[in-house]
Amino acid sequence: MVTWSNNKFYINGEPTRIFSGSIHYFRSLPDQWYDLMYKLKCCGLNTVETYCCWNLHEPNEGEFCFDGRLDLERFIKTAEDLGLWVIIRPGPFICAEYEFGGLPGWLLKDETIRLRTDEEKYMTAVKKYFDKLMPIIVPHLETNGGKVILMAAENEYGSFGNSTRYMNKCVDMIKSYGVDVPIFTADGHRQMFLDGGHADNTMCALDFGYANGLHDEHFAPIKEYQPDVPIFHVEHWIGMFTQWGKPFQPYSAETVAGEIRQHLNMPNNSFNLYMFHGGTNYEFTNGANAFNTDPDDRAETKFFADTTSYDYDAPLNEWGECTPKYFAIQREMERYLGYELPKPSKIPLQNIGRVDLESKAGLFSNLENIGKKFESATLKSMEYFGQNFGYILYRTKITTDGADMIAFSHIADRVHIYYDGIYRGTLYRNDKKKYLEIDGWMTKGGTLDLLVENMGRIGFGPDMLKGDRKGLNDYVYISQVGGPRQLLHNFEVYTLPMNDLSKLDFGNKNSDLPSFYKGTFKTPEKKDCFIHPKGFTKGFIMVNGFLLGKYWDIGPQLSVYLPYPILKVENEIIIFDEEPVREPYVEITDKHILDSMRTEEGPETIV
Image (cartoon, helix red, strand yellow):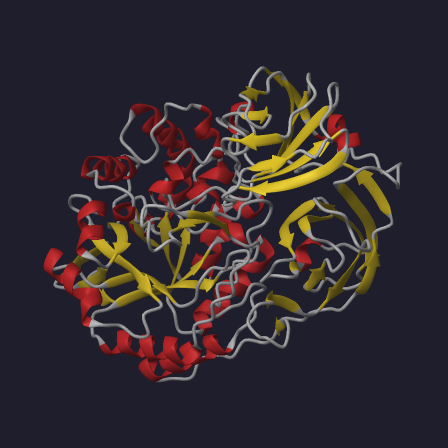
């Protein structure tokens, strides 16, 4: 039995301190799990923690997936084989800087749904997911002879809402599957967050970090709130996620080691290091946040998409190598435990060199091959057409001359504008000016194409409910100076999830833009490496049919991790770029660039 009282955890009657680290199974590959957890154990930790990702486990309503890197049971069994305890945080909402906070995009097809409430539509969808998820977890509870010792209900709800009724229903639903290990809620350390996010008869746990030490004010509210509960710092942030166009945010190994020392010197404290291994936002699963950037308008927020890399400046870097932070934490654990811990060996990397991408395929000439076509009188969101990720194209005919402006009421998130196949401009949801001047190029009878990218759904706070539906979900119009606005209607819509490119036609080397570029390369050894798309601007990379993720030359991430399990002797690489390509080649090396914005001298390479 797992219980708590007198500020302590007990497992089978023995006082136990939980020393845990976060490793997300969906941000790594199954062949890597044992090594990652072995290194966690070598660092002196006794528990591994993970979220569960609803958006991948149920990619389409009623269709479930629990294999490959979504094989949660294999992940749990790997931990059990290593003698580690396990903490599961099933959601339904997880944040995690993951796309839409782990919620599936298809929930947004119904514009009446109210997410993260006890409203019937939402809770019915949650239950259908839990009906599939919980039977995987419950046999591995400690009370059933397994290693799962704690489970969470929802996540950081106090940073979103204040419905104790909803939180209680989340807890009751989890218990209804036979979960009899302690259930906790996780919120920030301030009283407001604890008041809003707690549930009855559960333990409150804390999320905070980047504080240059642990301070009394971090723990005072929870001690007053639940004086008998053990301090469980379930998200001790020892690094930080990264967003496009913003510098990588390192957090020193020395500071983290000092915070671990503080925890260990507090007799009953337990903690979970977030992240112990961050991993990668494969495919299009990176999330986004909305931050206030205007001190004169505290209610206004801007959109910031997360990078493909979720390295997080963690003790194990993106590809699982031990960093100086790892060994700094390990030294503190050795002092506490009183014995020396094993030092894991380094991960082998390889340098393949230049790979030319000699085949080219235009997007517009391949719409029927990789997209699904719809007809719509008005603009509707990506979710309306049953699409979660990728791109969507809206096409219509212009029926008049003389327009001098095209404008958008709403963009989510970045729209490229083409007229008769010629690129005319790009608008972004953060742009104050959401219109484009027309300098005589729009004439009657021409074809307007609007290519929109989903850069990641907001996954934290109330902004995720501002209608973060992707694509164009309102109206677009043309106008003349001093004249009325004329809405555009009657669109052909192509959904472009980009998850299957097997039917691309690469027969036309001089095809239109944007385009796909294909090449091949050999790897006699299966070792990790990194793709540098030096001549490219913005898009995504696929190797052997596996979508590695996105790149963008604004940084700070300038290379994309290529994990060894994906590799074969003969390999195919496909890159899609939204912009003109300077020279279609990549370099595949043993160096990773995650912080191109830190130094004035130039990009800093993190090895």
